[in-house]
Length: 525
Picture 1: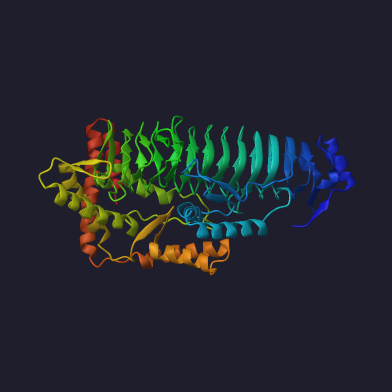
Picture 2: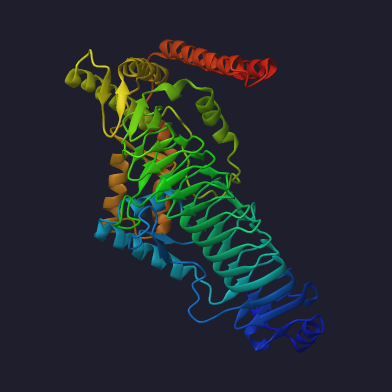
């Protein structure tokens, strides 16, 4: 866009409309700028204003020395006391975030990624506070060092300092009443409202932060929704959700996650500081009043309940209940495969992707019975059978990695995992798989990306994102195909029968009406 200095008659019009500046020569505007839309606003330092902009009742809009606009800022997620493992920039995706965080100890690789990001930020940087075409700003106190993309709306915000709002033509960004943002980047479709206070934070596509939520050194990707509670050093992948005032997400990795009311995580094990962290794999969630002492690793689609303080690793036992009982943790393997909650979760996520179809940044694989999860299921079967072999087939309990498993639960767990395998079809897949915060991919493909970063074949952020896009497009090819559709259909019907029984159990407990249960059962597919 071409910018020009204000004409004298425009300056006079702005001053008549209650505006002021220490130096109007530093305020540059689009060729077709119209001062009629700007009233009662102060400007300080170099400012760029696009066409069709409306500004009313804004205390100060300014640029200061050393402005970053929130770009190329390094924060520490998971390890709150770390030296920094994630670099924020407006094009950040959940995949690149996962790549950085999981490879921070690989200094040559991390430094290469750091160089790619710095180069990308420099190539796309703005020289001063910039207000894009069609932006509306009203009743805000302070906007310092902000880069506001086209058609964003800010209404009643208290303070934005070093922030970038990066919309797309299909999805703008809304910042509401009493919001405070410092060192924040927000992507297309984001809403930050109702007194949210966020610092050193990334708010991804179609994410919502509101109702007084506070965040520090945290990132939220693709359709995450945060109200009332707080986060610190949280790495939140797609569809991470917390609604409750008393919930704290700290020092963890989450995706497709739902925090029950009163959920808490502790990253102080004793007196050495907030150095501990953990992982809630995709689909894992916490019941009301759950409290997990990091470090711990909760497997995919597990449900964690009560206070869990034995630092369990259930990564090889997906779909399990993980229950704190005193200082002990009890695991019920596989049971969450066949619950109404899991059924509703896996069916709702694709429908709740609010991002526009074009211009999506983070890649999301919605398959729930995927090569990644089935790999875990197979690992779980081997693990449970090994416990039986090692500890005896007549044991009452089996001791695992920071937990115990009742004998009857172990036997039932093997049945659940067998059902999962039959539902998937026992398809042969390409090696071991990993979950890159929403994108499922073979580890072999990830290793190739890392190698190509090191050898220079991936020499820009854009090229890196293209490689992740190629992986996303290849998923159907790589995940394999079943040669036994009949058994899959039978297993699927068995699974639906479990779901029906679970729904009926809720009716028998008097928690829901018969009409509601029947409506749900009739919708099963």
